[in-house]
Length: 266
Ligand SMILES: [Fe+2]
Ligand SMILES: [Fe+2]
Image (cartoon, rainbow, N blue to C red):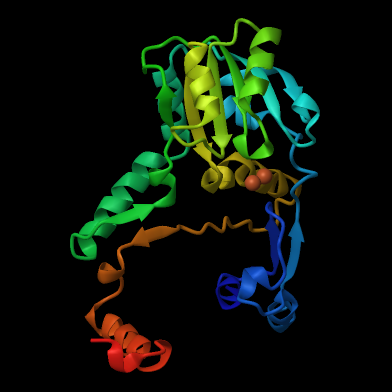
């Protein structure tokens, strides 16, 4: 990464997610790379969250209530919001997210990549986790949204409670993280006749928070060239990864050096 940063002419990195030293750089303390390449690093996470209503807007609602410790659990964030006039149905909400997260380009890019690599199957983060409806139909109207982040501790009893507080809620929206299909939260939402939408995943936070942050820096420092760094993560079946030569290399190394009973391996 350090060499790439230098090749791009970057001398300061500003991350949104906190940096875990050594974890980010293969066990080598980051300082060793940063000093070597004369790169400065700053992070801006907690102080940035809460500064803007962008997550609600992207998902098509305007929050009229924001809790950061719902049910007395610190960090259990809950927004309750009204759908924007242009978002009338669940389908509108999904289409808005697909558009704003540039998913059509990702889809076309992945199709090209699969073809180019020999018609193999590849999964890509943003497409594999694209927004979807877990309960309800695309034509269902959206009026009032409870917007939650399941990894922060929102549970089925919290949903019962918030519905009591705002009986007009018709849609539960989970973003950043999601719930599995058998989850109590989904069952509870279905029992209550609520729509359940899974919105953006964490991989697109570069758009949700990274881009506004970068834009603010650019507006503050117009003479600075600001570049967006983005990783694209894919998953490929082992048998399809790389090419024949590198797969043979991996097979030889594994058989010769990595397996304890190599004589038993055919
Ligand atoms: Fe994040
Ligand atoms: Fe964040």
